[in-house]
Amino acid sequence: MTWNCYRVTLEARSPIHIGYGARLGVVSRTRYYILAKHIWAALTNVFAKSIMDRYDGRIYEDVGNSLKENMRFSYFYIRSGKDLLAPRYDISEGLKYGNMSVEAFEQRFISSYVSTALEKSLKSAEEGSLHEVEFIKPIESGKPVAFEGYFFTNDKEVRIAPSKSIDLEDLKGLEMRVGGERIYGFGKATITNITENKTFFNSEIDLRDQPTLKIEKDILFQVYAHTYTETDNLIKEIVGDFEPLVGREWHKERGAGQEICCADICYTPGTQIKVRQPTELKITESGLWKLLPS
Image (cartoon, rainbow, N blue to C red; front, side):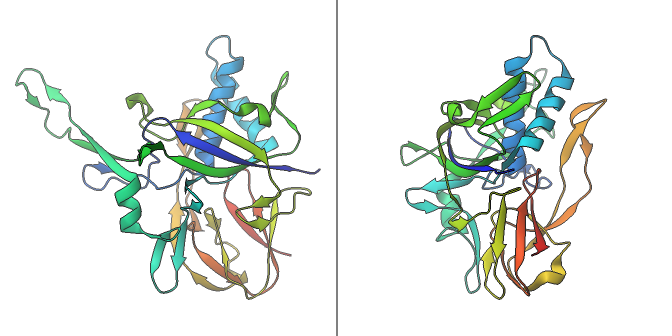
């Protein structure tokens, strides 16, 4: 089976909040990029609603499983002109976004929204209700903020249900909702460009069987997604960081987000690794990356 690779551009139409860890006081922090699972969830929502006559939670589950079987997704990072502002750990300067320092990136692209509930009887703020939400700005320098990433499909037309298929190139103009705080209007994004591509984050990719990258021995290689550390015996050197990645999954009885999956210890996006032997890197159905001996 041969896969197809598409480079995709998303433009923000409202603030984007990608929840990150526990609250810091009253602040709900955001990641500075969109995870693959958020793209999968957003498309699952859009496609399920497009074929649903009336609400049926099983349709969301069926469409989501079909997308996991027939597609793979990368993480999406802010594109500013010619620069992709993906995290990158510099051996002397630490974490950067593209060539920008963390502080410069935050100043340009990150803001927050503060709200509180009101106690009507006292006509004052309700105690303990102060809430601040970080978000990625939808507009920067007068232009919509654009994200860039990749879709992979195992056919030119992707089956999303037994009687429904889609052509990826027809998705230009599709609006979806990504991330959290959607009840406050956050998360609107539109696919503005989707083109078939032969490279993946400037690397050659093997599209036979499933999307696979080759990593040569003793060369620093940057990862663009959370990458499992379970094969750390392959690693000779790293410049970066680790993170226990915990997520919420579909629960058959309670619905979306009600199943807490166990933590996977991962290298964070932007980490550079050097392997002891030629290694393959596979993109899993969850969007996480996995290292395997060649």
